[in-house]
Image 1 (tube, rainbow, N blue to C red):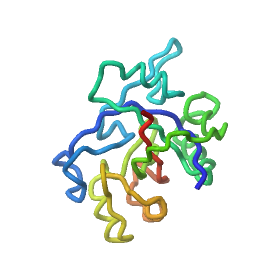
Image 2 (image 1 turned 45 degrees about the horizontal axis):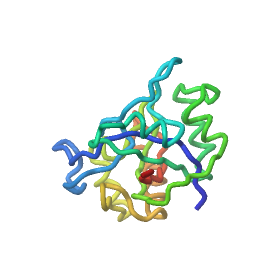
Image 3 (image 1 turned 120 degrees about the vertical axis):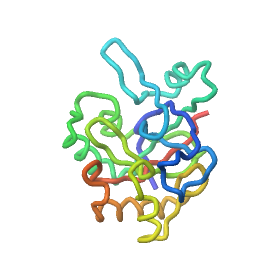
Image 4 (image 1 turned 120 degrees about the horizontal axis):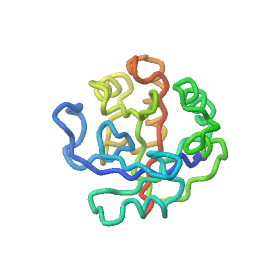
Length: 189
């Protein structure tokens, strides 16, 4: 499937917390969500943004922090327009730059070390993951058979898409997330 570059996140890899779904693995979990990991911001003259536009600036921000990793995030091309509509509805003006502008430009992803797919959704400036909203991992497993694998990510993209579509249709992310996508997470280095 064709994926569009959302950007780069500098995030920690943390073990499952007691409040997270028991269906998650105990080892390090990978996530783009600041709900379950530490996420560094790109601090610039015009403000800050948790999305970096290129791997070099993300690596500079991470310098000296071995506890953090750079993730390249991609969104399936067919999910870009509905995601941009959801982001606009959530208050992020697409003309404001960063993630919406990159998605609109449809730049291709380049990292080849794909870690897996994370079910994520946008809510008023925050990216939530299915692992931060209580019980969704188990709800998805019961309804679709999809389970998190290595790093708490879904390893098969088709399975991740089925799970994201089911979560969207179920409304179980309400009131936080109404539209879910399967974000492609890859190690950028």
